[in-house]
Length: 471
Image (cartoon, rainbow, N blue to C red; front, side, top):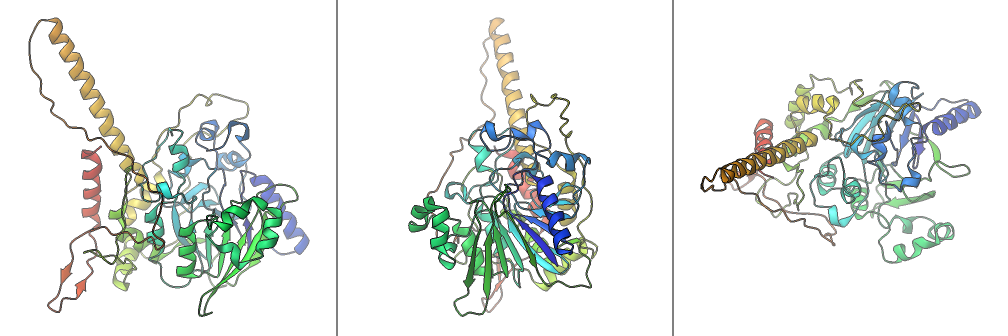
């Protein structure tokens, strides 16, 4: 299977697809799949540009909207992860992945999918320690702070990816795994990027979470972008059993090394279409109760806690999830537009305020699997806040009316509002193991711990109760 790997796309889809077609003409071989490693910039209209964390002078519609509107169709299957320059409001509609346009698939916050038997895992965003343990609390319209924190990686995604067992063929991340430069030609890298020297010396270049995942899984290939240069490395396991081939690529510009074609063995008996990974689906189901959309520190289960802390699914648990999908794991072709696409001849959306949108793709996926849509939980919070504001306004109006009528009446507050304090952290444990009691456990007569499969409906009711009654 021939796969084209792209570094930072920066919205230049037409150029990327044209380049691939030229490569096919020169080599006389068809390319089956395009993988983009972030900064994809799936901006549908001018409103989406307001949700992208870039200086105004760099805000450009580029060409994605043509594929979203149907004016053009991607000539080959394209999958991508998010980076730090994205239309975050659109990607937030698809937290578990989905089609952003016909033939263009976003992996979501984190995901594992298959195509032709090749197992591809990915993590969107970049690592920042201050938001590592936060919930996915951001929502459009974003503030100056949340427009950046929305693409910061959270501990729940890393925790989920660490539950994966078995071989991973390709792993995708936007920022590099921390410390990866020592496994390649570091001197050559510094000749082209001398300002990396301080970060490399201080061991702050790249994501420690990504390196932990790399050392946990040792996938066959790891592709990244973000730092706008090409860099290759070989990262061997200590005993030499497994080796990961790492490759970072540049951004899409003339005379830059932004594209690489690789050939990877696949199962020729399987179609080159996307399918869900059963183990990943089961992990999402089993860890649904760990999802948070609140602004505060949230811990992941650890082995020192009193609850289940490993969620690598059993055969029985996977069979249960497979039944939910009627034994059909093909990713459905169910793209639907949720906003009007950009029209160069009209400027009627330039004053539109971005808002939270529930995407039907996510709704169907969550209903099938039996998990929560983060956007729905955020909407519950918004509705609760609006209800409290309306009650306060009514109460205030009533008090004013009574005072003007010289009626003396005492009103007691019938609601309490908690002040939430934003917690941040500057340092993170190297192994990222955080302990949180999640559920009761059962013990048999021999004091062996029995891991209890969570009840999905119970968790959904629990999550709904949390977000509908608490601000």
